[in-house]
Image (cartoon, rainbow, N blue to C red; front, side):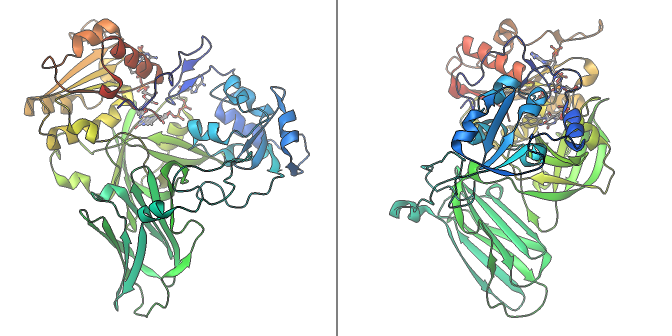
Length: 523
Ligand code: FAD
Ligand code: NAP
């Protein structure tokens, strides 16, 4: 199903343009880039107008600061004076003004959940809402999404789940032998698989997150004793039982499993769970094209994580003292060599194909990482469901530039695991011939698997280009996207610059494809 509801892609206003971030952006004035903002925050200038004082802000006071030249916004109980940030906001002043003088938590979560505002706006902090929240933000929101939000975006009371909700709540237990600690999680969900279990154990801190539909169950403990780095995860798929097996460092009897941390044993909406990062080592960096590289990152031994098809992760780097976060879509190391080999699904590495922009803040910093350096990688996110492919007969993948990345795992999955698929066609838009990612591999794959076809379309070809040229358009799509049979079940996935995706979705609608027949990859 189309993951963006109708109307969620409003036509960009005349001042909007699309930049590489995946969301419509407005052209910023010279001197108003993210780097310029970071410099301003380091300049020592008083950005709140309060000379470094932090105050308690009442609702009435907050509401007074609702103008462009005097704009305060509350996010998760903290109030920021965003007036100096106005001109630096990539989404434009109007977007920021939507939350002026109010609690912008929900709006922020809808659009920028992954942006580290605490770091970006730390010099704009005015203080806390005077209102006293009862519980901590985010993770304590309840199981059944009927949270009662208050003006500061915090949940007023922990909803006590009713009997039926309690029945759904997973539980856990543990036991030990001389050398092992086994934690058993009863997820109460059939069809558990390795992609739904994310475990990290650093020093003595254990974190296990279990994805159960759109909810997340978490166990988070300071373990009683030290454990070895390598851990095992066993999943009994049919009964939904997961075992985390830890290896004791010392052969001692544990009296307790450990000290529960703040979010331990909580079962909440997945979107309310904060992102968790672990440090991964850069083990290789190879050229794909003149401006795009394949980065291979190694997960720590004590991490169990497999990024599902169609989902992305966030990378986090400190750039000039500020945390900057950007999304990237893990791929496979190759389309052809290891294709159909289970080994490429091993959870130990994450492969990312990343275009390095000459003026790009994040990708320039990434490109400067040396082999052996570490970078923080988040848990996966995204709303693509493999089941959408499992019932399709014709699969069309419309990709532009690095919008190809979600298509890599998708292609693998479609061609190896979906027997009802009759045709799989990738329509790949690029500017020039040397921008085409993995061209040889795609052509090789098309030769190997008769169901697969690839078509390259260039917007800036040279005279020698014998293939198709142009931009995404109604006529082009009506020519390239056709059902193999009159009533065949079709799925069309689309990914690229935001405007490309928006236009593609519109054209496909005009061609009569329904929302259920499309999936747009976005942040
Ligand atoms: P930026 O600093 O954002 O700049 C990129 C370019 O846009 C530069 O040329 C810059 O000058 C220009 N620009 C930026 N903002 C503006 C503005 N407001 N006005 C005018 N010009 C502007 N990319 C990949 O390469 N591989 C992936 O697998 C991948 N996966 C993604 C998954 C998702 C869900 C999303 C949303 C995006 C993904 N991206 C991916 C894009 C990625 O997140 C970054 O946006 C990209 O790497 C650029 O980051 P940057 O900081 O280097 O560039
Ligand atoms: P690019 O090289 O600039 O462009 C690739 C192709 O797309 C070109 O043919 C280009 O034609 C066309 N195109 C670009 N902008 C367009 C627009 N506004 N309307 C119609 N066609 C357009 O692409 P890129 O630099 O690799 O950028 C890839 C984009 O994909 C980034 O914005 C990235 O954020 C996004 N992405 C999103 C996800 C996700 O959401 N899951 C994953 C990966 C990448 P022109 O000659 O017309 O420019």
